[in-house]
Image 1 (tube, rainbow, N blue to C red):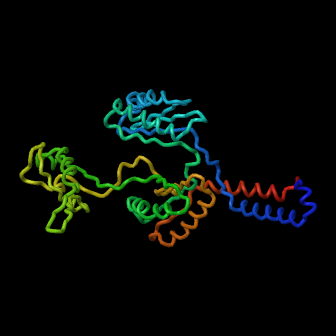
Image 2 (cartoon, rainbow, N blue to C red):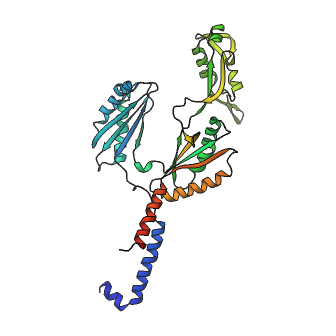
Image 3 (cartoon, rainbow, N blue to C red):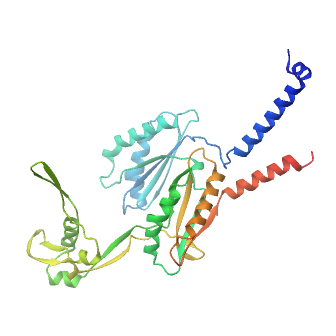
Length: 346
């Protein structure tokens, strides 16, 4: 018996079948995820290399060439390309479409480990990652302030705002734009060093040895055990200035000299090599990356609701706003598709 015969003999059943298809189709349509690109693992792997202070020519000859020669023996490699800059380089491996990316990642890691003995010892640990256009941030937020220093703005963004957005459902990662780590600046005086017969290496050795917290072990007393903690790190600028210089030219200095006698200590930022601006003012950027397979539009809506909640809790003078939102294009495209589907005459 065919479906048409069943529908003619049992019309109520046919109507119920059509109604159920329409209802469940409408529910599925409303819950269907929307994203700009499909969730596909592209067979592209990127290797990041960093050697502080090295010229692009040095990165090309001493680092990139060695890595490329090692990676060229991997099965399924179609193309290897690289870019070299001052202090850093990036090697991109494009594989066959039928090559398993996860297995290729393991092969790349093995080849990089083998080539490490041929690379400079000062080279940082290479970073290996899969390249996927869908992993790009779907939104960029800016945090700006008129009456807060840039250092304070960056600390607040890192310690408070980041964790709020990171716990938003389906948010995979948070990228920083224009963020620089806070640090202490030590301005050494050549005149004071000559006065106390010290060198810059004496200052560096003092900071490395005296500004550190090493494990202190434990003490046992009867049936009790006490953990010992050595409070060796300075927690403020004033404490940092009191660090004693106990070596002079590598030899012991029997008259310790406070670090503040030969250097000026101030709170600052690491070397600024990238900046971020919002409305022409210095700002910190937050890039929102969604998880694989997540609904990009829903993630953006949750982030907007989170922004509305956080705006009430921000310090006075600080502003959080959306600088870029790629999901607006997705929503408008879907809206036009639905409009054409339902209302445009054929």
